[in-house]
Amino acid sequence: MLVIPDRKVKVCRDPDDDMFIEAALAGGAEYVVTGDTDLLRLKRFEAVRFITPRTFLTAIYSELGWEADARAEVAEVLRINPSFP
Image 1 (spheres, one colour):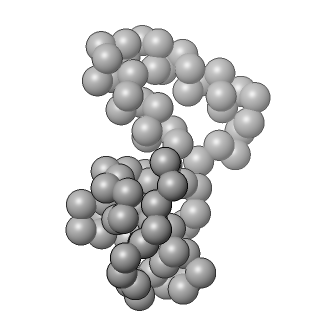
Image 2 (tube, helix red, strand yellow):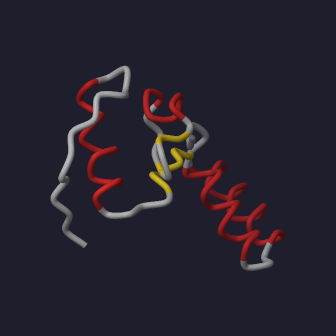
């Protein structure tokens, strides 16, 4: 999906990250999955939540009823990339 933001925001500690918030709002996103600490610090802006990839994977697997798969998948990702957020 291509979105063209229709409003400007100035809410992030890093002003270069505001464009991601603008795009998320314009696209009606519920989540922004990121490892960016400035965005994660916000936790939420309006209807958009900022979460880590680990949190997103766990939430999606849990929503599907695959809790055991979620734990195994996250463990495997962490084995491969210990710095995974």
